[in-house]
Length: 345
Image (cartoon, rainbow, N blue to C red; front, side):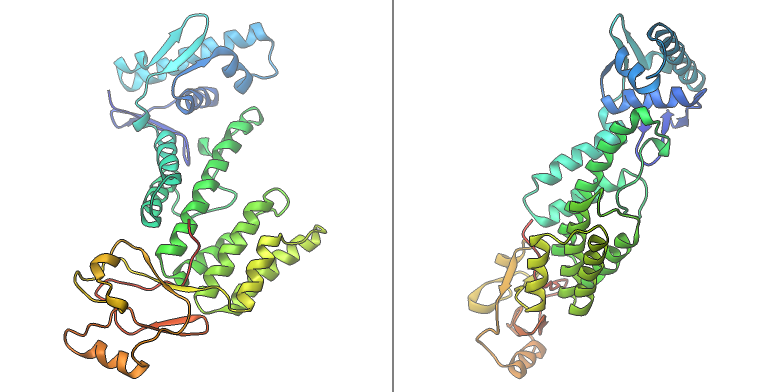
């Protein structure tokens, strides 16, 4: 039976493509708890999450009635669907669902895989998939609220854990983008994230990490003033709480203001056989590996490099002239792009 369960951005259960209409809020939340667990859920866990203040005997009856209501709702959608909720006598209940058909478990799988990704591009792809499971295209901090935003106080711990997992993936995603994409495209999105309500007290570490990403993206876009402004926003917010930026953030600002962050080239798919500086071939540089740039390179002059790039079959690949925070690329094979720096993930 085709069962699809969504508990992240929205709370929705589909049987054979048809949406299940639950009788009440408790039925929706009980279904979400079973889906999130991905297996048997003890009666005590149901009661603790849904009826924490009820008399234990009364709560047992409420749970039995809730499960009966879930089965009726499933049966009304598809007669055979009622059997998807199994009873473990004296223990609890289980919703029989393929983890691959539950958005939270797909998210978890991509999250775990992204942490062990072997390249920034692989990590970017996995984190993009994971974040897409939350439904909204707009990234946010401290993160969307699961279960369709309907979270009773007794389930706040579960929701908070899921949101922490979202933030973990979000920062992996942003770091990967800083490596794989032109920083001038990422910087405005980071600024928008910073405009969201994001408490520097409740989420101090994430707030500082976001600021460091903003600073680096602006700096690598050639806008040192914007990088310093991002730091200033953080410093002001922390000062209002009688606090100050961490040593790591202060050190990044020092490097930016002293122009000490190295530049590098990142190529996605240079043409095979193209020869680069020091005899490197494009084939050897086509895996997204960075071409480090630490200063003005020996080699052709600016005019000579530009001239070689214009000549048919010219062999200058990725030759750079570094000036301050910018690296000028005179010739790259089709679809290659340049990126200035970026931390190792």
